[in-house]
Image (cartoon, rainbow, N blue to C red; front, side, top):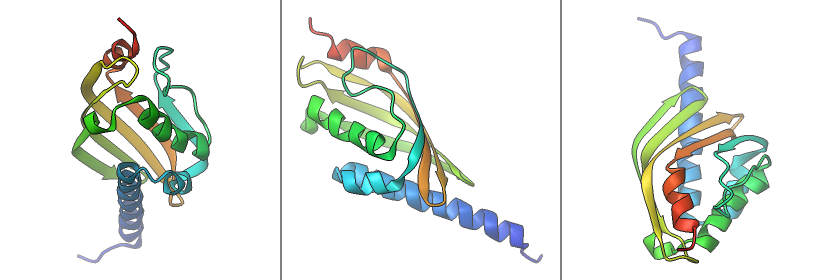
Length: 147
């Protein structure tokens, strides 16, 4: 059965998306904010449930603001306690979905948080244009609230 041009194009788009998301994960693990800024588009559809008790969660829309979230998270949490495990990584064209589990400790309170997460990313023209994160915001807010 011959391979159609549209099949090759879709495969190429999926491959690009997978590659950019893998680069994103590597930059995130390395704390490479410069690389994260380069991976995010100039304008990003950012979604992370607003949570006034959590200092690193706020609206963002530019690549620099999105990359800064990772620096802010590191400033407010204990690095040695931070864990994130990806158990599913699905890619379909420009969209990628990762699911897993995360945990950490808030530096100011010493309290820990944990729970499952889902992250939806969209990659267009080699850059991340959508970042929607769904996580256990109640656990995180409780960990940020002093006793």
